Image (cartoon, rainbow, N blue to C red; front, side, top):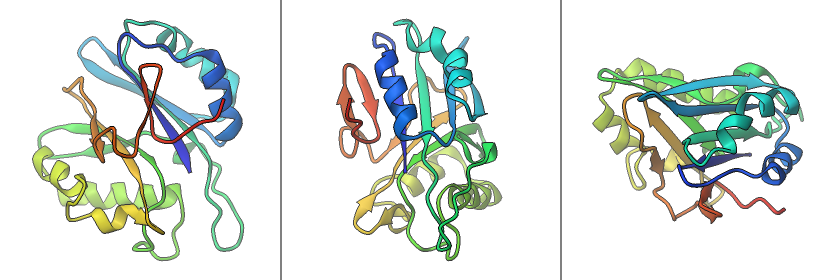
Length: 195
């Protein structure tokens, strides 16, 4: 399980929240920031200080829009965790008419048998990329109640997904907030984080 933080303009991410997220979800981080009309991203941060240095200017400015992802690797059947930079978020989606970045919090169903956690998200992204979908088709598939709804449920809990389309400042949430998302000081969090 992980946590996604969406920070629109007008809000800030406190050092206390950043530190607590890393404390709870310390298996890697990544982000995307809206900069000059497009989303710029970086992932693979495996040390808190390195991640913080990369985002501190953005998270403390009320004039920036940023998405942060803190990862906690899920154990597989053998008790192993894939704690590798390649499994940090976001993952790149190639659609027919645009590019996108995908952030996920939550577990997928057992549809990808034998694959657990971020490797399952990576496989999902590979499958989506092979479909060569258009943006509207992608949104319909990921929407709450869409064709992939069953994939996004694990033991009754719905995964939260946030997609950033390269030309669109507004994120695409699945499910749409506030359902499944926590509002906190102007931010949207994909799960509760106790401070």
